[in-house]
Length: 143
Image (cartoon, rainbow, N blue to C red; front, side, top):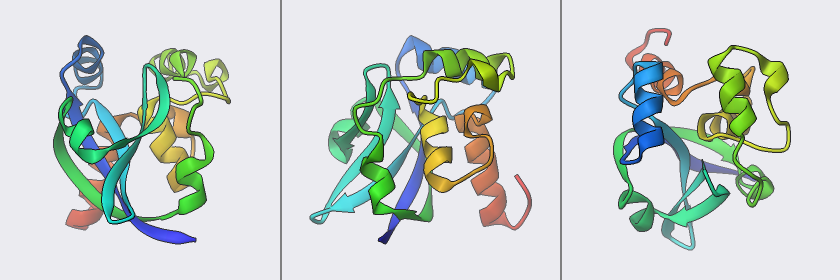
C-alpha cells in the first residue's frame, strides 16, 4: 500500500557526520524516511547499529533537520530491511565509486532511502546528492 512519507535530510552531531559532510561537500550528512504510524511520526534510518525505525522526537535529539520532501512509498518497504546491518563496505565502495564493494544485505543511510524510492544505483547516492536532487525537483530544475 502506498503511503505519504517524507525524505528527510539532516546533519548529525557525530564524527562520522562531520566526515560525511566534509567528503561530500554537503550540509546534509544523513537521510531517512519520515512517516506516520498511528498518527505518530517515525523515521526509518540506517545508523551504525543498523537499520531501525525510531520515533521522530528521539531522532531530533541527534539530528538537525535541513529539509524534507514528500514522496509516496510502499509501506512494506519501510519495514522490509529493519534489523539489517549498516553497510560499512558500501560506504567505502561509494567513496571509491566501486559498486562491487557494496554489501547487498546491508545499507548506509542514503543507500536505504534510494533503494526504497527505487532510484538507480542506490549504493552510489549520498545524502548530499539526495538533497540536491529533491531541491532541484522542487525548484523545477534537475539536481
